[in-house]
Image 1 (cartoon, rainbow, N blue to C red):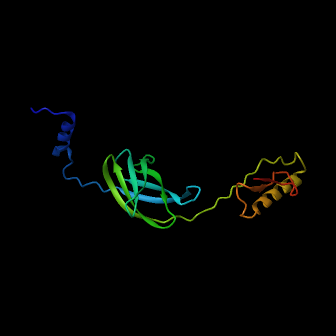
Image 2 (spheres, helix red, strand yellow; image 1 turned 90 degrees about the horizontal axis):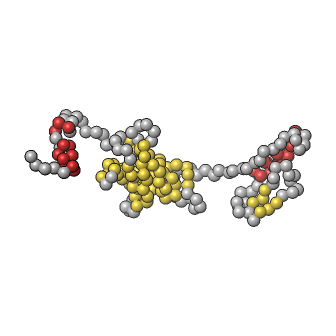
Image 3 (cartoon, rainbow, N blue to C red; image 1 turned 180 degrees about the vertical axis):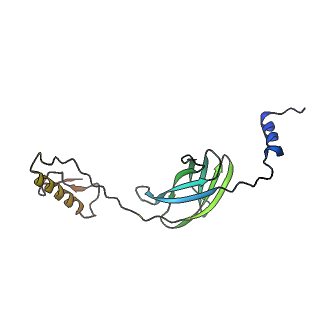
Length: 186
């Protein structure tokens, strides 16, 4: 009997027709879904967070390589199990200032499991305005109606500030202060 090392023995066992599943249909190719999210990378906002989901791969983990239309590597994403199903998911930052074509290569180990060309369009940009407020002791510092009115005026004056105010130099009013007292931080 010839001598085998472990690697060649496992290769020989895998080559046996009994274990190959005779007559069974080949597994369908994995499906790759790529969706841009509404999140942008600060400060310029030129890169968009893109979620890559691969279903039907049958591997515990994988890697997605994203290249642009010229073949330059844009980024890589580790793909990990998504819930209890067979889908793997990961995220990568992709430059998406306008609609563009990309190629997604899904690799398991060093083998390419799937390849797909996609056209990504940046989603609508949203601006989130964060308005901080503090706890207002309604009825402790003044009559309930007066305290609520001062609080409403402060909120209204803050939302009415022009959009030209930058975060580094901002006019603000503290809750409970009247409109004559304001401070500027720069």
